[in-house]
Image (cartoon, rainbow, N blue to C red; front, side, top):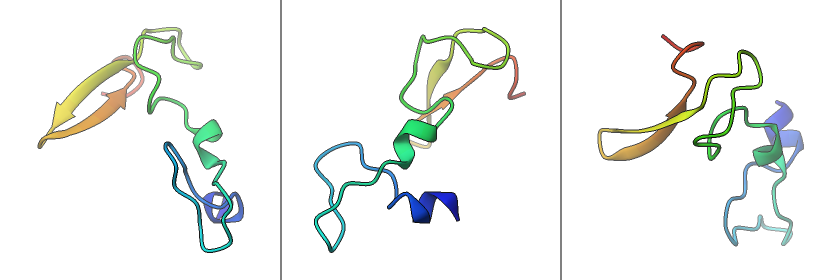
Length: 63
């Protein structure tokens, strides 16, 4: 529900029907933060490719 209230997640030039960019991307904990430190445990965030799609994980917190 919070993501909807924040108008979604905008990483590029996407805007909604009212011409507004989303702001939920600022709430994401690991996506797009490869090599930054996990905010929970301090382990570097890893970027993986799963089924041809990029994804980001904390190798320590997400097992």
